Image 1 (cartoon, rainbow, N blue to C red):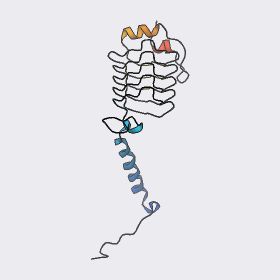
Image 2: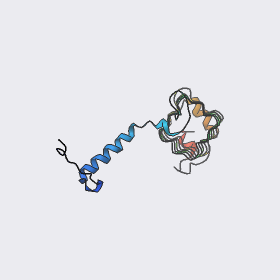
Image 3: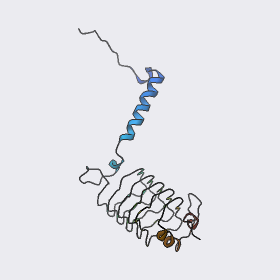
Length: 182
């Protein structure tokens, strides 16, 4: 029976173009199933590399690419996210008290029910971020932050308008304008 099926090893370049393209498309789409929470070692019940539901107080995430990272219900007091790419990240019900989010890309991030008090949001881009429920930005520095299309409770908007100033260096939008201040 030996020799009934003879196969020779093909080099990738020998495979027809359409088959290579299909393989690369399949490989690319399978990468979407990788859990984005596995990008930073945080430890805990969800695995050795999870950032969801963790105490990450004072951790340094500055300059990191954390796109769609899941920080739900995490404690991130005094964490450093300066200049980080947090596009679509979830901070749902997280404690960001005193965190440095300056120059961070927070477009589409979820801050619903988050405690963002005394955080540094200088020049942060929050376009399209969610801030629903009891989200609090009390005592936060918002100079140059862009809040375009961020749904805020009216009391939070009024509070932030009291200290809103500056222009976001990335978008060119004035903080007061993005908050719809009078």
